[in-house]
Image (cartoon, rainbow, N blue to C red; front, side, top):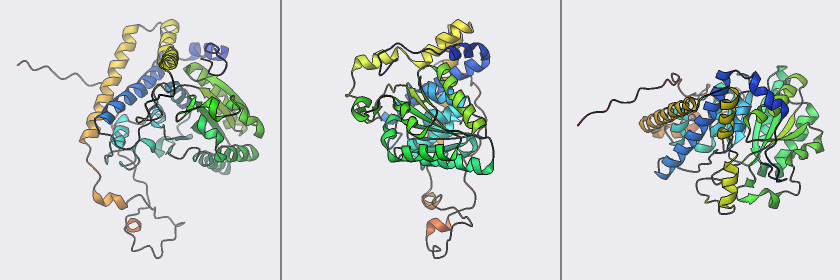
Length: 381
């Protein structure tokens, strides 16, 4: 891939060996997870054009290996926080696509009750503390998670994902400095997809090797081919182990690529068709599919069957979103405050949002796990 050095895709000996240690079922599950993200995002693009999704929509197509590789390493009690391009992480972490699709459509059955939209997927039950629409704004939150883990004395880990544009924000330096100073178990992951909105890395950063920014704070750092699932797992696995066992932060730069524009409103005219086509040759799903066929002797028909199952699951999620009710007017005042002993509410009695506050979070209802549905019978006419 070689964004900066014009080199072929880098291979890692440890990653090459990891596929042999990965059970066949686990490997197929991770392939399916990447497919689920890809098909979910493609369907989102379609219904956005149909006017069923409002606001912004930032797609994750092309970057699937990062989210799937990272989430495969976390324990159920670990945490993560990310930026506005947040769909892929929630899906890779195991959140049901149905409330995610409903959230995009602004329905009450959404993961954030229809109030967050594309940029604000939250699922506290899975350790997902959401997407943040402010570039770099969530990095201090990740440091705060690491500090909470330190205070509790547990061996949990917090992952923080952000784009290459965030490394020039002050919050990046503040978060890395305090994490190194206090020994916080946070893994900071730069998803370098070459462009901060429409501005290329070459025009935005004097230092092109972004992972080297960690040297200013004495943080272990490395870069890795983000289009290769196995290489991502190897690199992030090392960083997660360091955070869990040594209570030290890491900075990992994963070189990846988004096939679509910054958002659905971006035609992407700042890059050439040839560049996009070249990067598609290194597609993470295609590459890992080839690994499965070579190392695990998976037949092409089995991969195609997985794809059909995923597409059926996405169709089911769209049906759920379309059938989910719109939020009632009363919900406008909910979820603004929380009734906590740490919040002083005197004088707020006249505020309808305070009166609507509750002590507990309002999590989305649990859905039964997806099972393949039989195709509807054809009616002869």
